[in-house]
Image (cartoon, rainbow, N blue to C red):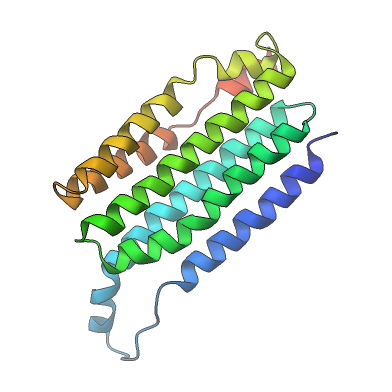
Length: 191
């Protein structure tokens, strides 16, 4: 089967996740600018999560653009990825309200870690379907970026119990790594 329906469904789920995430930020009752100050941690967590969801949406688009077709196992791998993406709003709200607490920070990292693992599984299911010599297989290659991300998320989860700021820095570092556009798929499709 082709990838069009899978991509359309995924886009819809991701759009809903982004919408739910912004609804998790409470509207202040007071009309003064100072009423926004307590929301700064929630807003910063929202920005980070928005960037993460945007990164997954963009890379998912490139991944499916490179895939010529999908299998049943790829459909389930995609649902697995979407499951974790839909948990990002919940953990964003919890961490944003409790940014100084270890458990919300660690659980946020666990969701990011599981999302990265789910993306890894989806990408490699598609490579298995298309072959390692396909443009997609060559583009994914050793997938160093994803492996480094998984290691940094794991460290962040563990270090959240030492100091939440350390975990936060690691989570931001992973986002920065992925903000540098990943041109592997575009390069391999062009050649």
